[in-house]
Image (cartoon, rainbow, N blue to C red; front, side, top):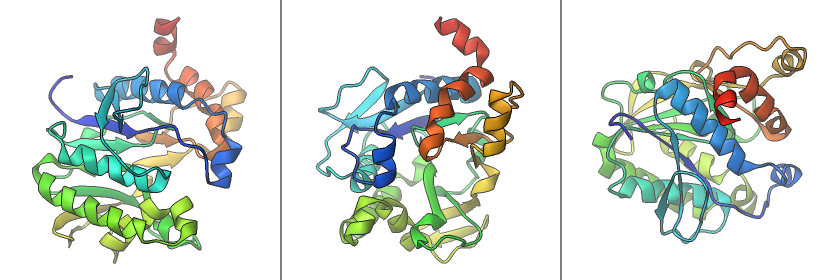
Amino acid sequence: MTRGIRLVAPFRPFMPENVLHQEIADFDWIEAIRMLSLSAEAACGVPVQVITDHDTTLPLQTLHYATTERRLMLWNLEVCLRYLESSDFDRDTVMLDSDQLIFEDLAPFFTYGVDLGLLVRPTMKHKDSWQKVLNGVQFWSVRAQSRLVAFYAEALRLAKAMPEDLQVWGADSEALRQLVEPFDLDLLIQRAGLTVQLIDYTRVLQALSETQIRHLHAGRWNRPTRAVLDFRWTRKQHMRPVFEASFPTLVEARV
């Protein structure tokens, strides 16, 4: 891998606890990560590496760490912490969710002097406070390694003490929210020893919309206007058709 940014995606197979995950239990996460990685290579010049456990074998580029948590929300924080602690964290890193495609280079979103970049919703329409933070795209600066380790260790500690409903879904986002609030969008703020930028998520990410789905199946697909396209819940079923419509040369190369 060339020197530059690194892209990582946490993944380990888990039995779904959350109702929404139970409804998509048949989703092919391995193929999703392959498509994510191919789109990342096209947009950023580097593939995605999966961060996972020593005992997890995947047909993907992987970095392995020892973890003990076996609930998804806690494990997500723990495996990120293990990566941040490791010698693998030797360059600025973007953490991504597995059910996304990348359409623009993510390196320009690293702002000079920022240790941690998080996506947040600028207005609070959601009844659950953890939804203020969209933790599926995170920017980690290598120069802040020791401080990021301390930050994510504290996030894991907070998440482990949360109520059962958040342990099932949302504890990882809620822990980050508690550590970075109050929000001050796009300014450099000091939180937990880090210089943090809270980024309006609409600058970086968009969720696949019903309008896009209609255009896709009518043969009128247009590439997204944001760097990251997110496939939420049952819209994951459209990830393959979107990939094929967006990256036809990559599809041809794999045939």
